[in-house]
Image 1 (tube, rainbow, N blue to C red):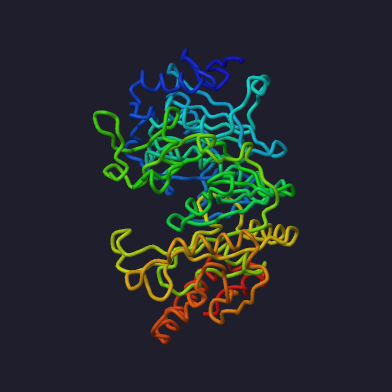
Image 2: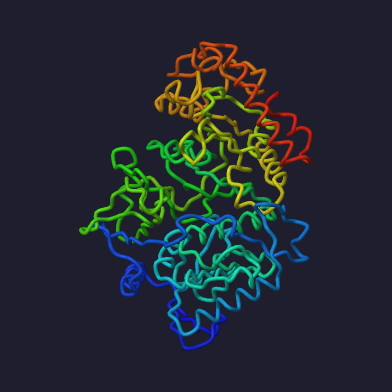
Length: 524
């Protein structure tokens, strides 16, 4: 394997460059440099400092002539000038001179036809370990003659000066789609690297006719794939981790004419409240080679996963082969079933409903779930949350590009789409119990097995969804929320209020969406 010099990376000085070190060598380097310590199972435990999660207000896209008309500019895709980008990049590279630098040359996209080569240049050995485990790892032969499609420069120790650099804080995450570069400054949170790669793939893949998706995916014995979309707290990880099926990936995928493929080679799991009894695969994956972020450990290195002192967003990054039923390589056939997950705290959405193509595109761009009272300061009751494409922060193009592509994929494959409410039914959260997990699992299993394809459906007049009249192993009376609410007038009131929120969100965000999509949502 060819070693690299600092000058080949654009870095002056006589610093040492370590390229594609092994996992043991990266762990050793991180320990030598005082970046972390080992847990009792051998995981590398680090604290990320001020930034314990993504910093969306510090994310920018370089506004160049070549991409200006493609990007959906707004609160999420914020422009920065090419001049400011070049200035920040130049200062960051100057900061890295005469230092140890850790380089990972790897891949994103498990289908070799659509793989992109990413070079990640890190100040920290621990972050280089993370991305080594999260992306697809090359062979020695693949490293010969390797040239990156995109280069990511990551230096948490370099702090921006907002007044000079034209950014909002000491941190900045800037993507330059024209020069194929990403700069990550000021943040020690490793997830910024992962999501920057994903944001690049969400720009690149649609140009190749591939739908990029923020979702989990698994595969059955017959080679049929299933895709699970859902925001945090909706049960995406729990429901896709089916012991009777193999896991393609837990977070980022592409859907091509050949099927579904994982964009990554690893997993980045939340750890808060982690218990082996409930999530044994994730619990057992936290071992040597895993990066554990912001988890409190005792003097013997034993993690306390219930302790959110540093953050509720504690994380573990590990390669997907640490999961026993992982599908390797991460590719599957055409999906037969698409599941949209939501946790409706208002208790008015049906536990499961079927969507036609237009309804599917509507709910895809809406990305609805709800936050509960107490999850954030000032929230005293359920609050609606809409995240475009179930992952708004990571999609640079107009939402209609991805929505239209989904519609085309559904038409070609005939995949069935279901909206599954893992939240409440029969009353708002706090007034009735949450939907029993055994019923949700039974509904998802029935959908995957095709057992809901030929049952009778009723069209819900408010939400414009098809509600099945029966589902194996689920009491028929709970399938329609109207039957479960004791006060029918209160149900009508709550249902119409939520339908109005859908309409308001859609009209505000997607005024130019085609009529077949905009007309397929709830009736306010």
